[in-house]
Amino acid sequence: MIASTIALYFYTKNLLQDEVEEELFSTEARIVSSLKKNNLPFSLPPVIEVVEIQELKEEILKDTLIYDPSQDEDEIFRELSTFKIINGKKYRITVRNLVVESKDILIGIDVSYFIIILLAFLFLYYFNVAGNRKLWAPFFKNLEAMKVFSVKSENPIVLVESNILEFQELSNEISLLTNKVRDDYQNLKQFTEDVSHEMQTPLAIMQAKIENIINTNKIDEDQYQLFASLQKDIQRLKQLNKRLTLLTKIENNQFINIDEVDIAESMGKTIKNFKELFNVEIDFKEKKALFVSMDPFLVEVLCNNLISNALKHEPNKQRILVSCLQNSLVISNSGEKAIENPEKLFNRFYRESKGNQSTGLGLAIVKKICDLYGFKITYKFQEARHVFSIFFKPTEL
Image 1 (cartoon, helix red, strand yellow):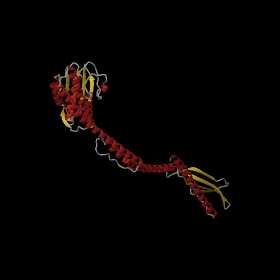
Image 2 (cartoon, helix red, strand yellow):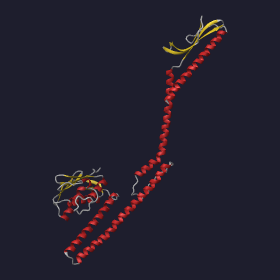
Image 3 (cartoon, helix red, strand yellow):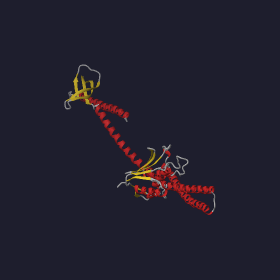
């Protein structure tokens, strides 16, 4: 566009100059014709000047500046001076014509090109935006459908068809993939539930048979210890199965019964139950009401797992301290040293001590519950105590 503008400028300038010169020669020819008809010489300065001379010279074609009183400035004129012998007399015929200034030509070209470029830009912009919006509409609609897709949904994902081959192939592959993922999820969920359910019965039967053997047969001390150990293993297996099922349900977001629950009240009931069952000392120092929106069952699980974890890792059976503050719950138990790998503390089956008989799922469940509702749980070792803190979201009224 820039190069064509420069070329157009010089072309237009030369074209206008040729036209001016053609007009000058035409006017000069009319003057000569008039003089040949014995008409008197005439002048119209500064446009036309006819003067008798003594000596002929070469024809002169040039630009000259002439003052224009109407504009109060010098104007550029194209001047043609010819020397002729007409009817035996020598004349100098001078013809001038006003030239369009280069500045005016350049401004005219620039304005014209600017308008053309602006119109072309507006047209192409509208055409591209409108075209791209229409072209990409199926893609963005399918993208929104993917964002809201859930493997827990029983209905397949609904995608918009497109005339673009690549978009249509992408939609087909997404439909196949999401349907497969949804089916695999449903099958895995059903398998987990079936295994969990079916394991309960044989474990209960095994435990009942062991109790029957202990109660109806005479067994020595070694046999009793063996059966007691089997019972503990069965009980631990039942507890492990129960907690794994609970973790799966939490991950699948199957707890949808949301209610306003007072954490302080639930923790108080949990502490009371543990004191009655295990005869432990738990000091519930601060009991400020703390209402959160969550499933009541998960509140019980949260409180039970936190107290149970503190009891299992209380080496000297000293006091467990519990505080329910304005927006947090803090539980601490004594300890000899800090946990070596705190970053693994909430991982499944992680146990700091191999001798501990816990399932390694208690804190993992607590972490999953916190993640489900957007709570934050932290651990620190302070003043010879393991301190767990949960920070809750404030309830919006």
